[in-house]
Image (cartoon, rainbow, N blue to C red):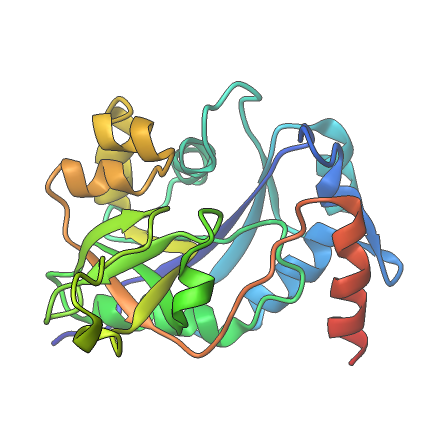
Length: 247
């Protein structure tokens, strides 16, 4: 085991959203949503610095006015991972750096989740990490909740919208199901390779970007956590977030 390499957080923040246009600028307790995400991420002591990566002048200007470090990126990126890769290139981050892809729509993010994501990188063999937590069988039936199965050493075997593993015999009904929490950390070299690859066959079938890593042969380490993220998908989700932040 070695010491941690330099670790950074990047928050992709697009203006366009089919369900919630301008979501990063949504007002929460007098500040835009991205500010709450940034403030929480920046409090993780294992991250040397955190930036916002946006494609919109309005978000860029708002970040500047609040002293949030921000990078302008191409509006035509197909995914948040591509936006983060461009930001890392523009910022000139070290080749051995670890980059945390921080979801810009989770204003109640717990910084401990970020610590759990980056700590495994003290092992030089770790290339990519993500989080998962145990859920019950009923929750696992929901196709909007992505499930993951792990090897004995903690590496992802597969991600699916289906209920996995499938229980064939009733006497095995005590199996744990793992909910994938869609937050990632990668060594910059792994992220560079990932964004250079076309969408993979299983990725296109399941509509799950992380399957591209597995199909390309990357070992993705899955950290078990007790924390649960909550993303803002629609304007009506803001009320739940307000209750969480005020509670």
